[in-house]
Amino acid sequence: MKRVQAATGQVCTGRSMVPALLLYGGVWGFTEATIGHLLHLVPRMAAVPPLAGLVMFPVGVVFMLAAVHATGKPAAAVGVAMVAAAIKASSVVLAPVSWLFVQNPALSIMMEGLVVWAFVAAFSMHTSSCGSLVRTLSLAIGAAVGWRVLFVLTHLVLGIQWGLLARGAPAVLQFVLLDSAVNGVLITVLLSARLSQRLASPSAVLMRPVPVGAILVLAVVAEYVTSVV
Image 1 (tube, helix red, strand yellow):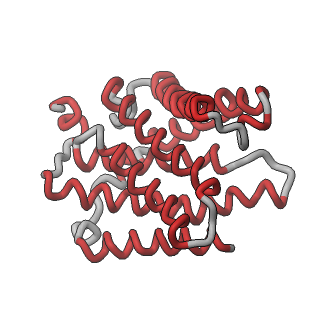
Image 2 (tube, helix red, strand yellow):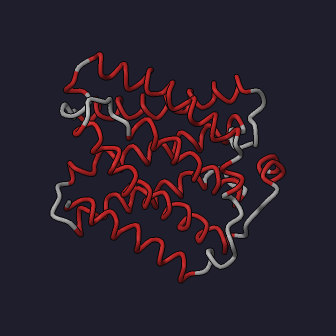
């Protein structure tokens, strides 16, 4: 814990921990509902590979690491993921959609949070540069492979045969290996730009209950709108 606190240079109290998780989780949830939704639509309109998985995990990493920097706690990554996953799952209650529609995205977000937490705690992945670019890239690809393997194993254990597994072994290998490599490059670029550190000190105004609540409501509304469109 001291190592994390020293590296981030910021430590929130227990009272301020929850607003930070809600803030970053709400922004991530809003991003998933808007940019993520648009990226899912692009392959349907043009002959391009799936883009959402390539982009949204690096985006999520930025928000999770921003929360780790802001709170000084590796577990903040899981807390942020829980908020974002809850926003994604809210469309089941609010919109006329099946759980199958949100199951994979919600599970993916939670697995991403667990793996980033593990990598932050084990390898100090949250530090400004993670050492050399090679080490940064290695950690980023490792985290990407980690949650994707966990995702595939969960589907195998639960016997879920539709979606990714239904597309066969080549699709699974691309998902785990090629997509992870792209994720690693994007995450390395974002970490090198110190984007998570730049987002780790939000205005005190944003940390208050009303702005945080407004962000959460906006994220849920965006999720509802994109679910029924």
